[in-house]
Length: 113
Length: 112
Image (cartoon, rainbow over all chains, first blue to last red; front, top):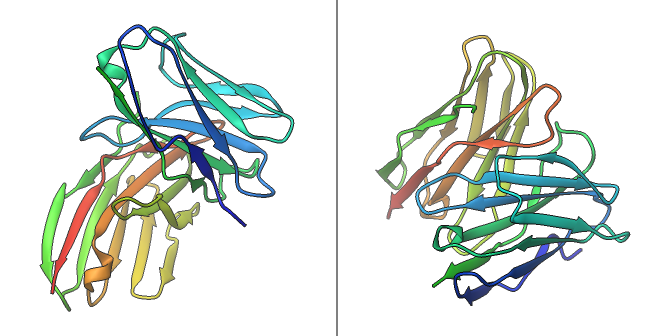
């Protein structure tokens, strides 16, 4: 079992560009959540996907969008990148019940210059 | 906006010392409290998921308690080892929510 895998591990983008981050959940998990961790902060919830639909969304602008595929993998897209979008983006997978642990990937480090 | 606070922000202990940190969270609308351990360059790893007031959980030298009425959880590490060095995150989940609200973490360094 490969656990949660994210790609790429690092990338550098220029302000105004668009970026796509990818996540494959742990085998058997159907729910994928995305978090942003800025420097000095805890992870902040962006949104969660279940059954290929956005089930819940945190306080992030519409520039942040996502998708879930039939195989439960997910993408996070960020348009019109700002310097403040520089952060570690974590993907977590879980079963549908909230009282079970979430399994995290190692994250994608995005730097916007 | 939910407020989940962890203290201390960081601490250094000597190998063999026991230590504990605190997580405070809203006492209303409680559903679950998660603890994660996050080593540098690795993924956050779940330690405990706690749901019941008065719950106590243990995994090896690490244990946690939960008080949902007053909104706090303690994480204890007995006989700290250098491999315990990591950031420990707690996360609150409310009733009807599907997301975790994280604290900023406690960064533990165990000095050999």
